[in-house]
Amino acid sequence: MLTAPELVTSAPRAGSEPIPNIHVMEDHDGAYDAWTAAGVRDRILVHFDGHLDFYWIADRSPQELLTAQSSEELDRFLSQVTEWNLDEKPLRELVDIGNFIYPAIKEGMVRAFYWVIPDPFWTTGRERRAIQEGLALLIRKRRLDAGPMQISDHRITLTVLGCPLTVCTLERLPHFTEPVLLDLDVDYLVTWKADGPPPYLERQPLAPWLWPSQFLARLKATQLPTDLVTIAYSVNGGFTPLQYKYFGDLLATSLADPNQPIADGPPSDTAAEAYVNAIQALERGDASTARRWWNAMVSRDPSYRSVYATPGWREEIAGRRRSALNVYNRMLQVDPDWHVLHLGMGRVLWRLGRRGQAEEAFERACRLSSGPTSAFHWLGLCAYRRGDWEKAHQIWQKSVEQDPKEVRSWYRLAKLEARRGSPERAIEHAKRCLALGLDVPSVHWLFAWAAWRLRQRRVAHREFRLWGTQQLQAIWARGLRWWYWIRRFGRRNAHGVSTPGSQADASVV
Amino acid sequence: MLTESQPLVPKRTLQWSEVGSEVVILDHHMGELLRLNPVASFMWKQLDGSRSASEIVELVARQFSIDQRTAERDAQKFFRDLRDWELVEGKGP
Image 1: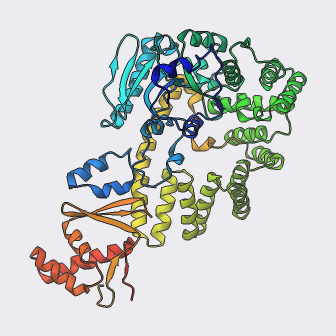
Image 2: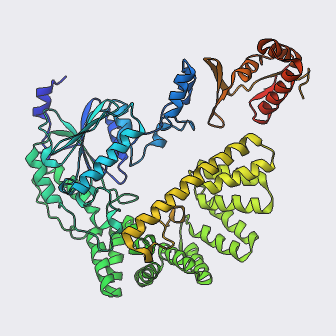
């Protein structure tokens, strides 16, 4: 077994020597899977990211509650609401892109955690305060598991789950005498603000604050030893604009072979190059050139033909409906057979009150889609609003047969069954909604009503209680969201806005 | 209404333990933890299928020094709630 000094000399230095073990992934929680598969233990993690990716997971088995020795101890256990996995879900189901470092520390893979923040996060007092507030909130949630925060000129330190956490910029990393786990998120290079909206929501996406070649040069200067690298694109559901996804491939290629020259622009003959050219042509109003580049993009990498490639979605989220309609119309000249565009157009028309045109757009989306699509949900809603409940039921039924996880169709079915006076079926569908994560006041209300009708008093009491608690929270959150969008986009654009992750836009394909 | 012919036992899918003076019940199916007050906890512990309803009422009256009528009323309500909340089942043959 190699002792520490030998490990140092044998581990390659990032940016100077080839690293053989590199994993590239879309979603960053894949890093946890890579570490698990490699069997890592007691390692130092150096995490380059615009986000901490550590948050508490409620993973304690509720059976431990029964081991309390006194009522006071039980009270204390129950006050730690963020800890108990009452649904008893398997751990991996609870792990996501926002918390995957938690199990890595808890399971002993990581014994020291360095969060390397983008330089802009440290340049202004406002950004530094945003980080401190985020960490303070983390500590408040679980005081027993998070140590006190210490702030100095160049770093912030605290402990989480007994593991030391250091927050600093790249230049302030210490010298490491053993190989570290090098974990990179592409959004590290493109995120300017610690608490801002995702970069892809900016109307004019900002240039990266650090280009890959600059990053690799600075990384090389640190002489960081590593034997395992994980790189996340973080486009889908993450914070990396699609046009910079290729940074992940550049970093992987360069770390694997540092002698290869690196250029920061999208490489020729790649989907990234074609995508950038397509969007530029679209903005110029040159539909035929845009179409040519778009088709090249799809043939080079079909995964680029995603909702993250269309600015229409961004305009929708920001509440700029007419602008969104404009974008979808222009993009339809480029890719008329893409169901996502018809679906987006349908949503915007719906919100503009043009229901007939919306229904036509949803019908086109359903026809053009080769797989499950939320267009069925919307089409069902059109029929329902017209009073054609039978048709609505058929469409939503078809929707959930195509995609059992299409939660909004399950919700509509639950509402429809309640309206029809079938509480048993309403309960069945409401349970499905909750199991799929649609844990919102309206579902609990439906559930409570149906349980009451069936004289299931305990269930009804519980659901009414949950409805009440969540309703108060929702009113509070809506107020906060309204305040945020008014500050961000102005009162005119705040009306009827929905934000990423809201139920109205839970599915955009 | 309590009846002699329906001794009740806790549902087999439940786990429970005594914590201090209270019984704590973990219902995995509902994802809930229930805490019983001292009187309910006492009655819960008598549900081993060997005691009739009237015997339980007798024990409650003696344990808490209350009259028979009050004990019966409290016990009726408690067992009705247990049934409604699906925490008990009839003892098998």
